Image (cartoon, rainbow, N blue to C red; front, side, top):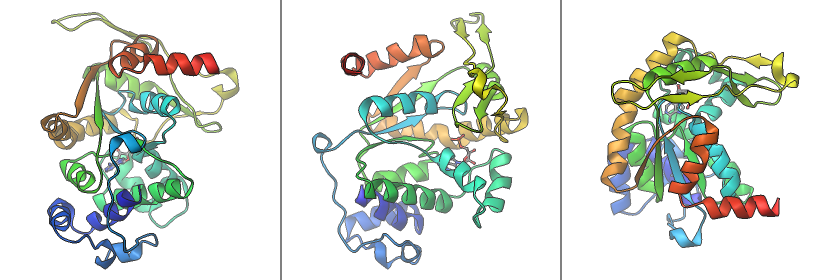
Amino acid sequence: MTAVQRLLCAASSGGAATVARRRMTALAPEQTPLAAAFPFVVAERAKRRPAEERNVQWVFLGCPGVGKGTYASRLSRLLGVPHIATGDLVRDELSSSGPLAVQLAEIVNQGKLVSDEIIINLLSKRLKKGNEQGESGFILDGFPRTVKQAEILDGVTDIDMVVNLKLREDVLVEKCLGRRICNQCGKNFNLACIDVKGENGLPPIYMAPLLPPNSCMSKLITRADDTEEAVRNRLQIYNDLSQPVEGFYRHQGKLLEFDLPGGIPESWPKLLHVLNLEDQEEMKLATA
Ligand code: AMP
């Protein structure tokens, strides 16, 4: 993990080409101007640990509203690895009174992407904190979102698998507009009841609402970027900038495509099946 932190920092100053060049030569992130601003840069060579000696390093891809956070956090609990969502890191920063908050609010509320430098800085800090607490492995959600970010990540660590969650666009918009968060416990809910008939060769899809308990009902808030305009903007940005990331990982043979068949009750067991994790869940339930 330390390698990821150090090199993410290094990468933020020069982009993918620089990363590739550094990989060929001696890696010296501590010498880059940006890296110097990060307190955890150490002058140690990057080490990549083989997959069998560490926890999983997975990435979740998918359009806004598809449910990356839901499935990534369930899997992280099952596998005992952290679920790191860059959107959460951005929202934490927004809710702080830090110097970035005002600058970020405008970008995020319009559904635009924040700069690679900012996102890599936030991710590096999160990885550093986790590393200090003994975390190993990760499930990334919301990163990488551009081919450049994917190349940077590729330059610093080995991603084992990339799960690409897919859902039709009309359903995505409804799901985003129905999304609510409890401002006390932080849990996500969804008020939308999706019930779309099958047509034009597409299967029908039913997703029951994910309703909050009574204790959360009066504390529900909507994300500022879940307005229809911002959601459509985010979908457009996803199609333009993030979809090429699918191709990047498909080309590496790491992409696992997963069409969501419905809500959590239908999708979760199928996802576990394709990931070969059914036994793991049974064991966990048996020992709970
Ligand atoms: P999300 O919760 O993943 O939809 O992210 C919310 C917002 O955070 C996005 O619309 C972006 O403004 C910002 N964001 C999250 N991850 C990234 C990223 N990898 N690159 C750039 N911006 C990001």
